[in-house]
Amino acid sequence: MRFQLNNIKLWFKNDSQPKVYEFLPNKVNVITGGATKGKTSFMSIIDYCLLSNKSRIIEKTINENVSWYSIDFNINGKHFFIARKSGNSGSISSEICFYQSNEIVEQPTTNITIEELKKIINKEFSIDDKGDYFLANNKLISYRYFLLFNSISADIIINSTNYFDKAYYEIDSDEALREIFLMAIGVDKMQNIKNRKELEDIQKQVSTLQRKINKEKRSRENIELSLHSLFNECKDNNLIDAELEYKSDEVIDVISKIVEEYVVLADNEKTFNKIDNLNKEKRKINRQISSIEKFKEEINDYNRNLKNYSDSLRPIEYINDNFNEVIKSHQVLVFLKGLEASLNEIRESYVKSDFKTFTYQEDLNKLKEQQSKIILEIEALPKIKPTLSNEATKYIFIGTLKNKLKQVLITLQQPFLLQRMRPTCCYETS
Image (cartoon, rainbow, N blue to C red; front, side):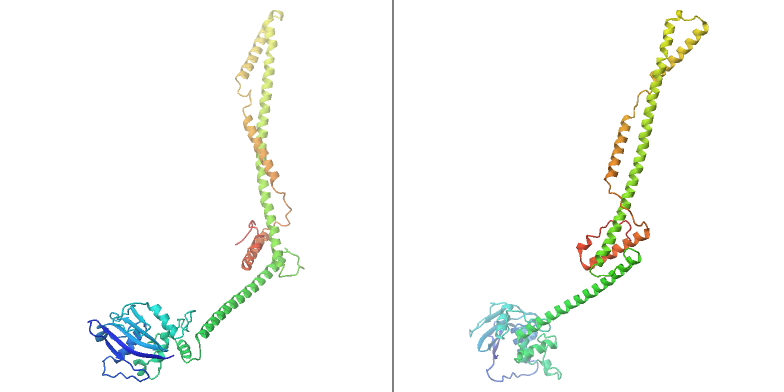
């Protein structure tokens, strides 16, 4: 690639004639002058027009008087003109004037954005914009990085240990400088850099997957140890045959079945308790029904007796009506009068009695309905299965066993096995 600077031109704010500094092709162009005359500013102006992110142009005497800066140059035989408006007090301007021809520009006017112009210049530096090409510092490759090899700043001139001004062109790592250098001398290509970056990304992904695989392997080893420990604990508690061998592909099913069986036994005890409570309620209602029915029978007996006493008055009434036919005696008369008075008192007592009718039939009917309902409830409950052991410690162990097995299954991420673990055991421990 050939880069030839043709001229630098300054437009002034006081509308005076622009100043042009010509550079001859294929020559060594020397700029001379005393100290503080602005020789270094030529480099700053070129850098500013090549779309630098900062301005290093001296503010006093130069930037405060200039309205536009421009450079005219050739790249690989193509003509380019770039003008950039001056900033204020060290700031930069985004107003750019660009022409890709030998057209003479009397007064620059903005006609392109910085990003659009960067793409054009990148293309001339053979930087492809079809993909993202990143340096080691994770920054996109730009033509500006290659300007490093076309200039020597004042800092490099007075420094005996550095040959490239990385700070001036914002290159912040030696690895990025190395990549740019290899591309500049033709040893490396941008596609190779992209391929290496993709390879590094793939290697990182492989490393990440390998770490996940190792972690999964360690996790499964720990799970295997946990299952083996649970299996041995079941043996110690006589929950499985002592002669049964450990098989890693069957151990979860074996332990799950043990837990399920004891959950059923726990359910049996729940059912038994419920039946026991219902029977207690049933016996209570039976006693109430029996008491009311006994009371009802006593009322019936009472009414029958009163009726018999009432019937006993009929002979006395007959004797009174036919007293002349009876033996006339004072003692007999007194006896009959006393008997009649007693029987009349019994008749009046019956008439006034509150117990001649049974008033608790409605209560009795309600109690019988409750009795029938309880009987149906008891019949609807599942039949109690025989319990092999009622030891509380064994149930506590089963609860612990269930929780440990659940944690193993969660780790294995096997939800279909978790569904087999019914959360109904009465004796779970945390």
